[in-house]
Amino acid sequence: MARYAVICASNQNRSMEAHHVLNKKGFDVQSYGTGTMVRLPGPSIDKPNIYPFGTPYEQIYQELKKQDTNLYTQNGLLTMLDRNRKTKEASQRWHESREMFDVIITCEERCFDAVVEDLSNRGQNHNASTHVINVEIKDNHEDALLGGRAILQLAQMIEASNDIDADMDGIIEEFTLRNAGFPILHTIAYF
Image 1 (tube, rainbow, N blue to C red):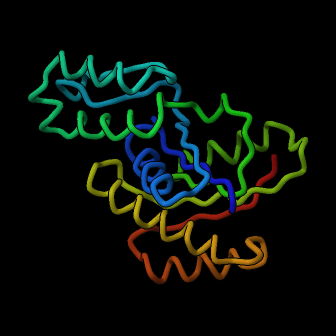
Image 2: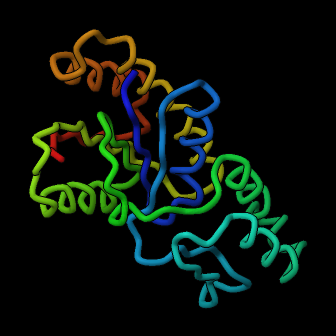
């Protein structure tokens, strides 16, 4: 079985939905964010809730619940954080991880660019290839649910392959035909 990483900006919504779905199906998966801080909606657009990576989901959940239970229940943040705290302890930043993966799936193009640039800057010392795939997902709860299912389908297609490297172009082509609403980018990078 391949090792997977799923990555969005804050390791809260899109990557955590995919992590949750893949984890439930038995995949070897980790999730990360590429931002400098974790940013969540606040009481107004100019007052986001900002946390450092590594802040436990449980702590964020309790703080937001105490701050305004109605607001954060209504906008779905408490439900999202409840899922997150059941999946892993805290958000993780991609740039701080030194784990290696066979497949890295990002959820937006700027995260794809950040991962590819970071891997290039690491020096490729291990000479181990990885497929970096972007599945473009809008950052809202509904699209994260749909995107999580699409990423599961992509991972299942990858697992059905006997040779990921030889089959990846065909897998992506087939995935794109089945999931036209999720534009794809793909490159091979090295650890």
